[in-house]
Length: 100
Length: 490
Image 1: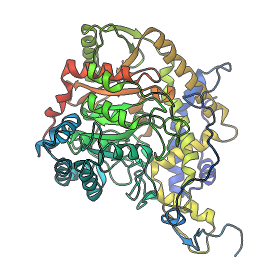
Image 2: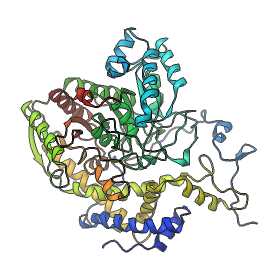
Image 3: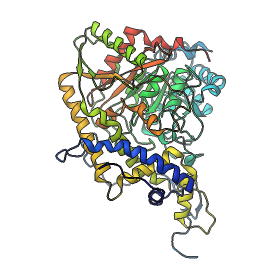
Image 4: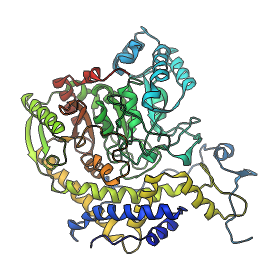
């Protein structure tokens, strides 16, 4: 499977998924670049046969457990110190629901 | 320049331990050098004068000690430091002062290392030149019109320009080794999991690894031992003894060692002068008693395409955390826009071109309908590359190649051509995909342009000591710990 042609609409869809509000100019520029890059990386399709297992991680990973005991952590003030906006000991965020 | 800034970390630590100079004097000499020279190379994003002098005073008071106590260090600005600005080279984190220290920062402080400040990098370590930093590129002390490599070009230029004898870098696809190669310095990527990632701002979590940068192999090994070892705060941290890297670096005996030259990493696309220096170095190792073979690793040619699917895929997920809600930049919050709109405006304003390119590429590779053909295939290639390493290490003890195909390229030369930029990592990526340690040591100047060439050594997982042994041999055979004496004065 070769890389498909990438249109501005394709990039606009990806930018929506990635929550990046790109301008039309950025979308056009990126569409051309993405097509070149995908054409180059599509080479991975040449080699790996169906009997090759995928590797997601360099080391064999097992879950790590620890005792469920309370221990010192960040204070509210330290956690909120870098917040763009805070109120009453909480993060203040823009509206989430569709209310005017 | 103060003579103190010409000394190695080993020499400085020795002088401080014998109380011939104070850690404060050593620190001040480096701060003075930064004040006069850093404007030329732009290695530092932030200089922590007060914090550095405080730590130096603690060393002089005997409150902290270790083999590198009193030695100043430059810290790549992708490692979080409590109360000290940490940007990862991005506008999205401008002004952020983290509420905690990375594990490696805690270990270095406890060992008496003096952190001078935070060094420049390509945004979120995505790049090979520092030109993708939101704060302007760093420059190569050998030629100020050229890149000091990337992403850790701030750390490599700081070490090469004698602003610090040692530095910390991070290596996801070569970001410690390629900058070391093009600046005539030493850089090592430890075994994945050998050094804690707790407090390393995440780019590609299955590949990211912090490691040492230095002007000598022993200095790199000493720093390696300070930062390495199991950390309960990182679930991918290896719970096993740290390989004996310092003793291997001091020994440097390669007689009887089986060294494999990677057959795939030469030929067209490689600068002739780089290959010439590499071949000479291999011949010297053979004369020193090493048993040299050519080894084919047929899937290494597919490492670059696999990497540029895996790393952007992981990045697209990791960088979702920059959501304008809890820390970092927030743009367009006018009390009317929704959280989602504010998020999208912030991410457009806060991320640079390369970061957006990789997030979009990763989003594509992971999306329904393309996942199997791209991300899934790349993960299979990762298996094949690991098998190549495993098969090679049945025949040889280490693999060697050039670190990067060319010497330092000119700033501006590749920044508009992403694929040309990506080729700088051609030879360094396989070790990241496999997880084994790899390092770059200088092997002279290329006869065609007089710029430094890097010699790469790749070793099996948890055999980090083997690469230090070979690197020490190269350094000794070529006298390459003195290579920087040939760099132009700044």
